[in-house]
Length: 247
Ligand SMILES: Nc1ncnc2c1ncn2[C@@H]1O[C@H](COP(=O)(O)OP(=O)(O)OP(=O)(O)O)[C@@H](O)[C@H]1O
Ligand SMILES: [Mg+2]
Image 1 (cartoon, rainbow, N blue to C red):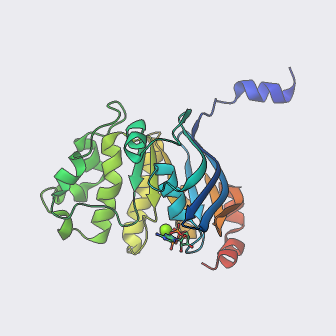
Image 2: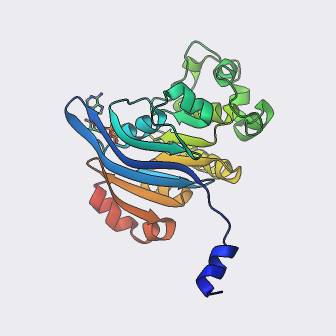
């Protein structure tokens, strides 16, 4: 047995949670994504980094099935979901955390948390576990969504798919507009989510935050993936990337 086959035998099998292949997306005649291919392994945190207008939100929405003017394939946990709508993709385990956080303002924190169906009983976080990791949501459990601060809304938006038992979270700029102390809390929660085996695709313009939480980074520019870097490569090139991305 050669060294490389030994390594292949001994290496733990890494299953692919999400594979996007050759994805194009349009708004009318304007093309927003061009031939995008990315892969996220089970339990991995990957980021999507790029300037304003690069196509980050469009890519997350396309993965979730919310943007329909697309071509290419989205495979989730071995199944081609390209032709499924957002509800079926959510039932399959894709968890959507939009940039506007999507909190129902007239419903309480508890109602916001429990209104979506549990999609995987084994993976779903119990309310006790949610409240242990997000103590502020326990304190505010009977408050309407409209009375929450930006940070509290973000916590609630992230807790919701965990409660559902989603196996991959799509997070669109969770740190945006939040105070550094809250960003730090969110960083800690992403580490815990990763430890629980849930995969994450995180859109992030804060390069230091991205660097602290992720295993892999995809750089998106003008709708194309221009680089795919592992954590060490990304860290060693942070300065250059900040300049290149104009961030
Ligand atoms: N509803 C829309 N109609 C037309 N064009 C759109 C629409 N939404 C986005 N676009 C365009 O598609 C491109 C990608 O936008 P997208 O929102 O995906 O970028 P982004 O990387 O998420 O940017 P940001 O950092 O500002 O959130 C941009 O050129 C944008 O102007
Ligand atoms: Mg966006």
